[in-house]
Image (cartoon, rainbow, N blue to C red; front, side, top):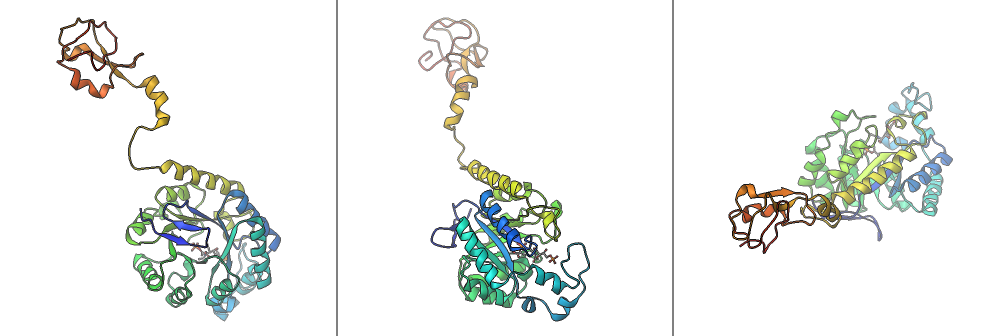
Length: 351
Ligand SMILES: CC(=O)N[C@H](C=O)[C@@H](O)[C@H](O)[C@H](O)COP(=O)(O)O
Ligand SMILES: C=C(OP(=O)(O)O)C(=O)O
């Protein structure tokens, strides 16, 4: 496991031995409604997430005019064209300030993905603690260089590209600073389980000397939990008030209750990962006392007689004899006391 930490602010560090940093991705699940956005901030806080995240886009920077004008005719659309749809989902600068203020009052870190350079500057301006760069920019080398030059903490997703592009992302940012994490991500809504390729997390951990995480768009929490067990130090999952709401991402999002269960289970897993040193632990002592086998006499024998293999048995006994691991050491030794069948055999009973 690499021990490198990323410093989000004075109080929050990601990676190393720190608990997994869990991001509740609101994205555009707020339906363009600031009250829903606030409910989601509160839900993220109540669920135990470390951070709540939005998506900030300057539409003319991210999309071509023609793309914005194309019809967006589907059940998740908030307008006739893609531009109208996206405009409906975009909060203004003052709304962002209100949301950041609300998150501060609620007591949860709040940030957004910068979907373009203008939005990146905007987020720096409103003092986002770190900036997320989503998979939509994993091939945007110009943007990545720009982001690197600003030297703010970054969390970067790597959907839609292959490993060589991920190395390029790493090279671009690390040429300027190392205060960033890479997230394994597959960009499909939802991701079929067989496409999650979670073991990429381990490959990233072996390749890059920065914290590695996972941004999951698959259904449910099982894959995300496995990501943490594999070593993810950042975990991002979408959150929604209701999966049946209109919008592309709701279906692959977690409800507040599911998000709470995810956070709870992540913490259980982290606790349970423990140490790779196999040892007897204190909580096993009652079971050792009750059920661990030890050496006892297989038959009645007298002082001076030799203990042949069939004379020593391994049984659960009370009181206990020697740990059964010592079986070989006892065989062919001579008894120094008379012993009845089933009596424990202890150090000093033979020579
Ligand atoms: C790759 C990327 O940006 N993905 C984002 C993060 O996961 C998504 O939230 C998209 O913004 C969303 O799926 C777009 O949906 P529509 O096109 O219906 O507004
Ligand atoms: C697209 C985003 O993230 P990801 O690629 O991790 O889904 C995002 O944060 O806006």
